[in-house]
Length: 335
Image (spheres, rainbow, N blue to C red):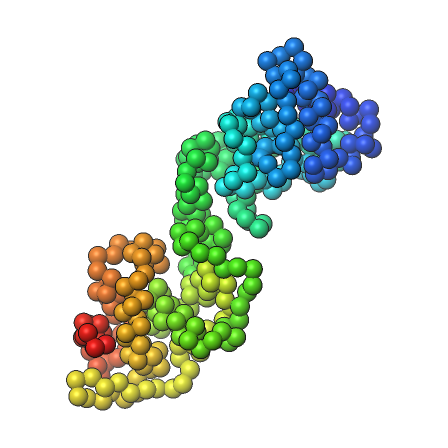
């Protein structure tokens, strides 16, 4: 029936190409529905074609089980941005969907394929969406790449997670997937905030949380603030142009421990030492799965594992046993 619908659309578009060139977006949906109704006569689909359109997915349904999603392009290629991965507007009961794609250029052409067979990748507009490629080769869909069938993925409680996991394998050092990460249930809102416009106590909280999540900030690596900068924008909606100064500005400090003063302490360590209580609380309240994600390791003991990561990053305090200092401070109920 859909093959016959495509033939009808091709025939009619050749007769009246000017009309069809104007049928972009949802303008084509009515024409497709009419063609489907005509070709459904004498078939099990007769009198079952229903144009849904609007904000629902798919645009047209048949026998309350099949669906057709209509897409158009004014460009001379068979690709376009598709629907949301989450499919939150999917019509109840629709299990088998086809993509009907109109290339509205001279000459006007149409193609129709099973929906999952022409979804090549994932792109981001205002939400994660599939990328349509009507010429996609067999075995090259995003579902082939994930090794998860479409009907399995769409029924996951969180279908974005396996996609996130797939794209993470291609990240370079310091990079992170944008938008796709739903492991932290929060929204950054629509406003990008500047670090210097935040209240002092909020800035301090983010600085301390950064020390927990990104222990590499204690290292001498030139890229030690890269992951932090990405996280602030991606997860918190905050831009910090002077992120290094947040940890290092202010010169050296003094630490008192076990009745002795230690001078020449780098500012980042000095700030850590003055915020042990807050750091202990943040570490306690941060879920293990979040720590494992950012630390890229299995967590057995939050405190011990964090101190070990800080130790691996920071190795230049030769006049004080920094690891013992941290263990002592984190073990002390007064800290």
